[in-house]
Image (tube, helix red, strand yellow):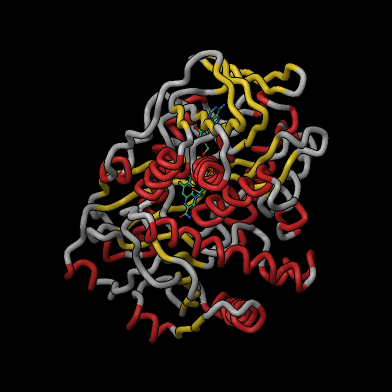
Length: 444
Ligand SMILES: Cc1cc2nc3c(=O)[nH]c(=O)nc-3n(C[C@H](O)[C@H](O)[C@H](O)COP(=O)(O)OP(=O)(O)OC[C@H]3O[C@@H](n4cnc5c(N)ncnc54)[C@H](O)[C@@H]3O)c2cc1C
């Protein structure tokens, strides 16, 4: 049984969003013909699957198919906030060092800086128009105590991991970033930028298709069996036989499809709205002048940025049902919080609201590799709501694993292997409920 309300998995139509309204259509998909065979079948046509398909077809002579239940990039890749930044983990940098040791932590952070540059290169070297914005990211202290935490983070990031940072007092950030009731100084992290997520995803789809991958949209895998060493994937459009499989379904993973992925993932809803374009005078009301994406230091963080046409995008996680009624409740909650963080913008018209599932795991890190008991099955998932950079990187690494040019040991240890089993997975939404309540309390 799916974890969330069935409407969350309505693959038939795209989720209406600001991105859907402003991205050119994707025209590179082709219908699957019943009974076809291929070298590699990729389940899921988001950043992970498309990047794996692109790198595989670019670097190896292989027949590669992407099977996507909805339109290409129907899932999180087509509807995220467009923050292309560091650290797809809910483990802090210091905890990372404690858990994996200093050298491994450095390897991991270096790989994620590389992930950001991979996205930039894919876009700039291949003529993808993805509206890049800003030179870094801001983390904004939502109270005075958290500014001290930002100082520690800056020391670790710059001192240990060589990532450029700059600590800005509340006064300086008001001059360079913005001002608000929840602004107690900020940390600038010199890695990352903002982008149009759907334009990037469709651009990546174009690259994969031009390199020779076959992208099959509206082709949901409904059954997966094996005949000898061949995988047989059944879809409503027919079957596809494959020598190797990459599972790239992240937060929308259908757990009944393969027992190896059941009871291991913690998908959670993230919600976004965009306002109408703001005038210069309206933006000045909060002294807004940064193009860099911003998030604050709440445990249940708010993330926000100005878009090229001067709208504000504002998002937060929450709602553990996915029910359409809960969606309305979530919208009102988000609107209220927006008004509290940016009182001068309270009541400004909101033009779009949408949501989708981000994917967490109990060990707080992404998961990449091949199944131990079937090394012809590869997977990349659990980017903890930070997959804009991490997922294309994971796709590229998965392509290398499939081609045999890298082995799992070449990956940072933090991302090696599947997410751990969750005890009593039927209780997952209750665990998440408890976690949300705890973090809300902490944020108070
Ligand atoms: C609202 C929201 C905001 C976010 N904001 C940010 C952000 O600002 N920055 C950031 O770094 N990350 C953000 N994320 C997370 C980021 O979008 C994801 O980590 C990333 O897109 C994951 O890419 P993916 O390809 O692994 O998964 P997805 O893009 O989710 O793709 C998985 C695909 O698998 C398909 N699928 C599932 N089951 C089947 C099946 N049986 N057969 C065929 N296809 C199937 C789905 O239709 C889906 O398209 C956000 C996510 C959401 C939902």
